[in-house]
Image 1 (cartoon, helix red, strand yellow):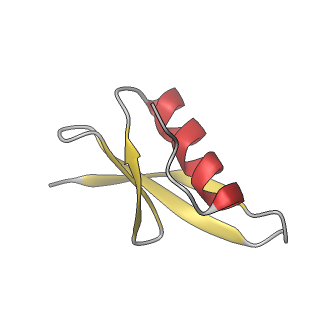
Image 2 (image 1 turned 90 degrees about the horizontal axis):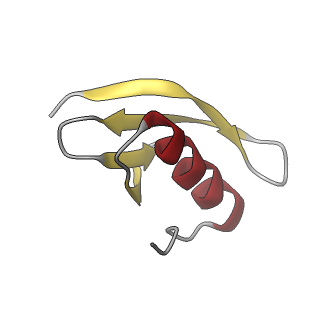
Length: 60
C-alpha cells in the first residue's frame, strides 16, 4: 500500500487536514480516517473534501 499525499482539505471551522490517495487500491484518507474509494485524483479530492466537511463518506 502506497499512500500518496495529495494536499489538504479544510473543515467548516477552517481546520486543515492532509489527505492521501492510494492509487493501487483507490482508498482515500483524511488524516488516518477512511473517506472512501476513488478512481482518479480529482475524485479523491472530492471525497476527501466531502468527508472533511460532513464527517461522512461520499455515497456513490
